[in-house]
Length: 117
Image 1 (spheres, helix red, strand yellow):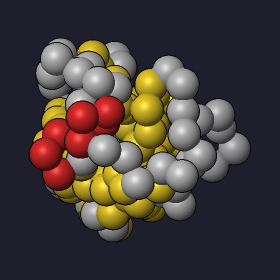
Image 2: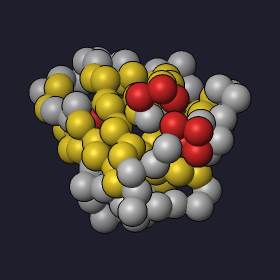
Image 3: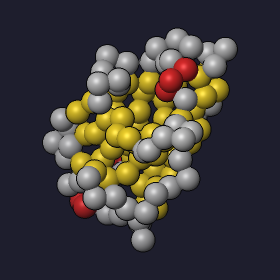
């Protein structure tokens, strides 16, 4: 069964940066490389939403709130997905998850991002 483990979350002040990592295990490199992968987030009391996704070919699609601030990337050889987040705002506070898009595997534990002074 595919397992997803996110890391890199922390508490940072507004304007700060973080780099999130996601390790995808129990999935072959060849299969992983064919999937579109995405970062999602869920803020308290809100539904989970897509932050950004990256296709098998490397095309990035960002949500409006992520454009110009967040960058998703992937390393197929390592079956990992990353999210570089810059210029963080308090409204970016959420638990961040990675997963396949649009059909998801079982969700990992996520990593908490808190943007607060």
